[in-house]
Length: 560
Figure 1 (tube, rainbow, N blue to C red):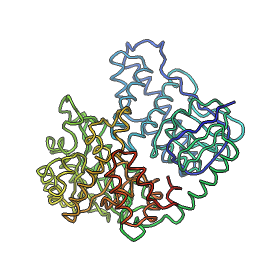
Figure 2 (cartoon, one colour):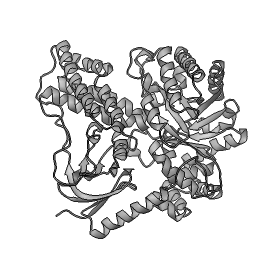
Figure 3 (cartoon, rainbow, N blue to C red):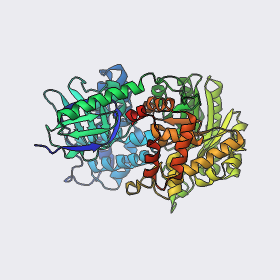
């Protein structure tokens, strides 16, 4: 009999469920007995055939899938047909790796690049791993990995779950989904929400549960109960009901109880993202990461290709605001066509605007394309540069962007220098947006990809919040708006603190907007300002959050 336990993860699809666990077994992986490649061309052809077969099967599945899941399955099929991936495998084969090892290593390199981008892009790694596992099974002549057959209702448990599998689940038999990894903006999370299946990701330890163990979960708060009592199941259902009530009526513009406006926006990275996000009840996009258009290519995208992409993104949002971040590459996001050589400390190297100052042709083409897209649409276009540290850099970018006729020009605040000198920088540009992921990394001197430093990378760290306060003070002094486009903006509790610090807009995964909007409407600006003071003055991240919790409206607790 299973031992009673409570696990916590990230709730990505609200609702409660209780049923026996059905375990998804991991894919078989690399063939450890395979010989190394002695004919890279022939082996490369084998790999292309395997990837083509995977792409075809995924495309067939997309064709027969419900309308709301077609786009995600098509996107995964396109990954399998990506020429850049096949070329990356060729490089591994030429080094003498076996075919399955070459596929594994090439995908891992690609996935690492996506993870370095953070947010939505990092979570696309799951889609890549699905392609990898299917291709390796194809090469080994094994059945494709996937969800096992089961009788009766279950809660599906997996280390991670591929979008291609999630899209075909039946909500009448799969009552819940729990994974050990994954993220809130992954395709699996989005699909679970669309299908109405309660889901939790990043539930550490869930894969140790045995087949058939009774599980109860609350997808709203990310709680899993192993071997629950009847009373616990009832309480979870009651909590879910209260959360639904707290979210009821969460529509329209973002604002505090007393009418202080805070724009609620979406983070996006592709045209597909823009089309999905534009269907949500939100006020535009506060971060369009354009680098995905440039990565894994041998040549920079042309003016025409960029113009087409930006036009489609702007058209998706109609007359709503779209904030575009210009190319943020270099260092951990290298471009083969703009390789400036190895760096001893890439995170502090030539990246973002620094790269564009060396390769002006890249930024010139991008700004020209954005200007053309703006003329062709009705969108409210704002354009900002990443990794700005000095007034000279801000002026260099502002002069160049305004020279192309772009109406709103801004900067990212990602380094302490920009936060501390925000007033001087904002006297040059029209707005700023705080990238909390990098700002936290640089303020705390902690690599954001190093899981061992998670406590230092907590956005509740008082030093990080003090940096944000400095930036907002610069905004007040110049009358220029400051936004937040890092992951912190989607935390309903932290959103209140950021509002109290003076932030004018919050950009996040679209699925988080409802909860943030509801939280804002439960509190007035004065309370948010008091919360901000408590959080900044706290001796630690945990104490700051605990202090803020003491000030929240009771109904707010149902959102956390």
